[in-house]
Amino acid sequence: MKIQQQLWVPAGILLALLLAGCSGPPAPSPSSSSGPSATATGTGPSTATTADSGTGSASSGPASPPSTAAAVTGPVTLYYVAFADNGVAGPMIGCGDSIVATTSAPLTYTNKLQAAVTTLLANHSAEVGQSGLNNALWQSSLALEDASIAGSVATVKLSGQFVQGGECDAPRIIAQLRQTATAASGAATVNININGIPLEKALSLK
Image (cartoon, rainbow, N blue to C red; front, side, top):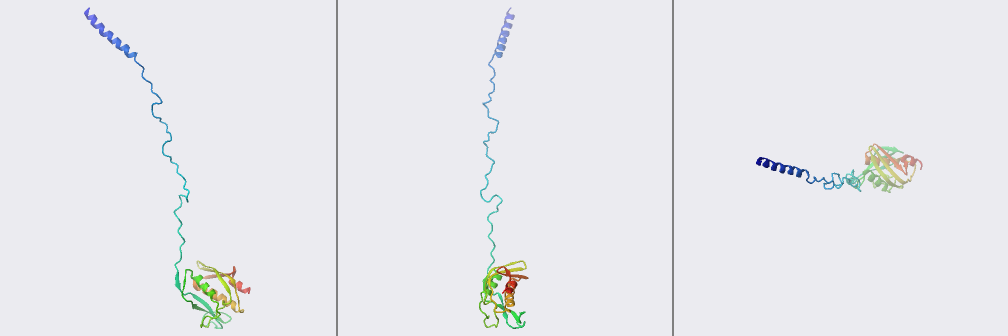
């Protein structure tokens, strides 16, 4: 009888413990609002860039200024006429005259062609010092508009009026202008226009 009582007590305690475990509070369910959101909210740094309001990303900086030719000081070659020389002092140009090279006083210039033609046109003396040479352009009123060289071609643009003392002045004027421009430019071809008309045609209209 004592043995049965010792076995009964532990069995009752075990049953009570099992019942208590089954009737405990339920486990709490996880809340959807307690954790951090897994969705991106766009709070990171923006990857958009602002357009440059200047010259654009292709700009390589300010343009370089155009190059300027260095000034040169020296004489230029000018051509005048030896009347009735028959090609002795220089090449014959018509009416038995010769075209003769002379040297100017030293000039400072950046465009030799421009300097030579301008100096020739600025001389309004009929005779060239004591040289015995003559200036067929002395009565004309001409101005240089442009003097340029492209490759082997020189272009001289003049404006104004010719004054000729006779029919022999046309070849003299042509020779003075052409030879002076050729010597200054070194070009194989020299185009001279007066008021937009080729030199020879302009003189033939006089």
